[in-house]
Each structure stands twice: as C-alpha cells, then as structure tokens.
Image (cartoon, rainbow, N blue to C red; front, side, top):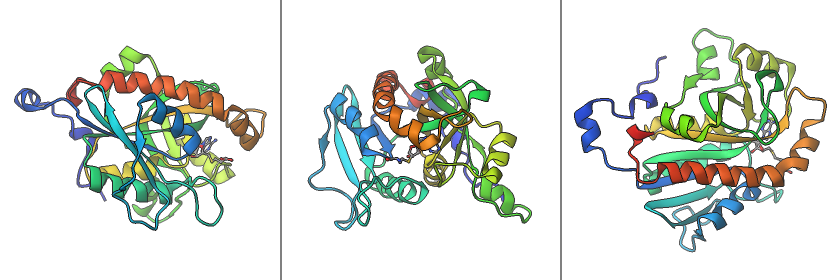
Length: 265
Ligand code: SAH
C-alpha cells in the first residue's frame, strides 16, 4: 500500500507557504546509547529531566535545555531493566520516539548514532553520513506488497543546503535488529545499494512518518561491515572516539539548523 503521507512533502515548496513558515524552534534528538548521547548533553548544556513526560516505569531519559534559539530535547531509551545495557534496536527506538513526539511536538527530529559502513560504498571508520534513503533489511515477508511493506524503503527529507555547507557524506541507510549480518540480510543490503547499517533508523522513520515530522539521520561509522575485523570488536574499539567525532558533526548540524526554516535546509 502507498503510504498516506509523504514526509518529503512536509517541507513547503509553495513560495507563499514558505513566507509564512517560521524558523525551527524545537528539536528532538533520538539516540540509542548513553555513550553516544552524553558528549552532546554536555555540549548543549542540557539537564536531565526530573519531571519526565514518560511513564514512571520506563527507563527512557530526557535531557533538555535551550541552545542558541533552539529548544533541544535529547531522548535515550535508557538501560534495559533485566540486563542493564542500553536498550538498542527498533522496538525501544520506536516507543521512545512515539512518546517523545507526542509529548514534545518537535519541529524536526534528528536520529543520531553510530553505524556500520560498507567500504565497497566508500565508508571508513570515523566518517559521518547523512542518510538519503532508509529501509529495513530483516523484515522478510515474501507475499506481494507485504514484501515492500517489510522493507519499507523510502527517501528521507531533502536537505541540500545542509549537505553542501557541511560536506558530510551521503548514503542509503538500512536498519535491522542485529549487530551482525546474516547472508539473507546481506543480500537485501547489497540489492538496496546500502552504505550504512544501524539498528534504529528505519523504526524511528516509521514513527516520524506517522506524525509527518521531518527527520534527519546523522550516522557516524564505528565499524566497517565488509572489512576484516569482527564487527562487535571493531565497534567497541572505536565507540568512544567516534562518539566525539559525532559530537562535532551534530553540533555543526544543530548550528546550521539554528535560525533557519525547514525549507532553508
Ligand atoms: N556491544 C555494544 C552493543 C551496541 S549495539 C555495547 O556493548 O554497547 C550497536 C549500536 O550501534 C546500535 O545502536 C546500532 O544502531 C549501532 N551500530 C553500530 N555499528 C553497527 C553495525 N555494524 N550494524 C548495526 N548497527 C550498528
């Protein structure tokens, strides 16, 4: 089925509509891991919410504050109650995004995080990418139309000025619930010409599409998926340095957004 709302259409193209459009004032940043979020929390001088909009029983955390002209919220899904590790993956990402969009009504969402990169598509550890397209690679439903629903491939909002000004790499992002890659996942990833692989992006896109909130995906490469090193080992080795590169990149993105309208991006 064709999605009823196309998020690429949320940026006004009509000149009159553009004139009425106000600058972005509220920004929601969704991040899967605390180690990825904390450098940004201190960079933007945010404080942890003592009176969270989330139900008491959930581990989700909201950090918020004012940075330049922007109201910034960073939300993370927090630690899993049973295992004490970050609640990575699509289920918690979708839930925390849903609750945050409902409660905070952001003008724009940024999904920031680490990702695997494909060297065959030019990715190296430490690169920062903006995703042009997004899809799932582990939702195989071999029935007509359900197959497309499963992959749910779609284009993200176009931000030509942001890409040009900041000079980040651009590429297609593919999401699945595993850090490793099965041969079936690999087949689909290659068929989709994917450059970056994560565990949250397409789930977050699903939610922000429902609410027609424009969303930008900023992904820093911690590991080369088609390289020699085992992914988990390479990921852990690079996480802290890449989190710092990500802090620099996200600050540039936020500074660029500050004072601009969606159509200026
Ligand atoms: N072993 C890690 C677990 C992190 S899971 C730990 O100890 O904390 C990986 C996280 O980084 C997810 O949020 C995912 O979006 C991202 N990620 C980084 N490299 C990835 C890859 N190659 N494939 C999928 N996700 C990746």
